[in-house]
Length: 297
Image (cartoon, rainbow, N blue to C red; front, side):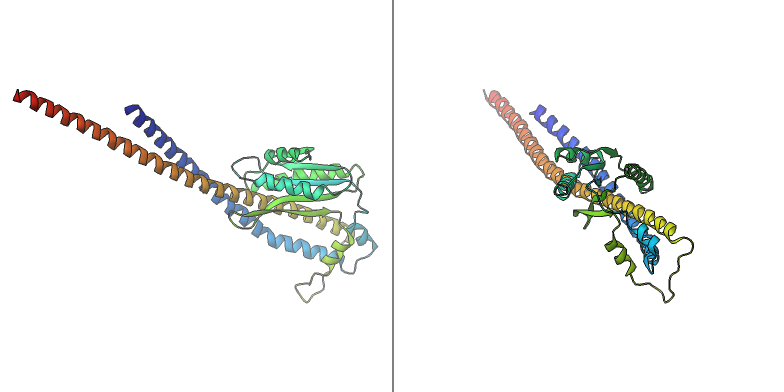
């Protein structure tokens, strides 16, 4: 009985320690969600500025601007960046995303190259038949996103420098609430005529007509680079917010399971402890009765 009670004490203590760890991870995930959501909101004004700059370049454009707005006819080469996670405890976060990537890229013809952001999603993509040709580490703060985006742009520019005109896709999980997310995709390249016309039709926020200072083609290319940067930064920040939201939900489920387990362990402990006390009292009473009987003789 004493061994059983000691074992239960150890289990209760271990569950309590685990609950403390889960609470710490919950707090860390909740605070991380906030910083990534704020970074996306802070980027909104800059994103709008880039869009207006592109719209100004495409208004009353000349032949040079048209050439800058299009990279040429799309070849069969397909390139994709997939933002996943490096760490676990995120539920089906990487599995859902890998399935979405496979279903989107599967019907497309031609050679496919995929770069993974996160080792966990790299493994899921390999299982889906899309073994990544490159791997990037998931940043652990907002400050690390800029460096990651720079690495991705350099890698993609090197691949495009081989003379291929590739379709360039972006995949990530986008948060829908603190615990819900959904996989989304975006085609970043090529920058076709439809894309240019859509931007050119954006309403200008003031009554003054925009004017491009300097060479229109160079200005347009500069804005296109910023467009790619903003798209990648936003995708990474949203992916990190969704990842931490998924981890927060997983920790909430784990905390509930631990509470249920602790309740069961405590009930078992108190029942066994009461049984032990009853046995001790029974032994005392039995001993007393035996002594009392011996005195009568």
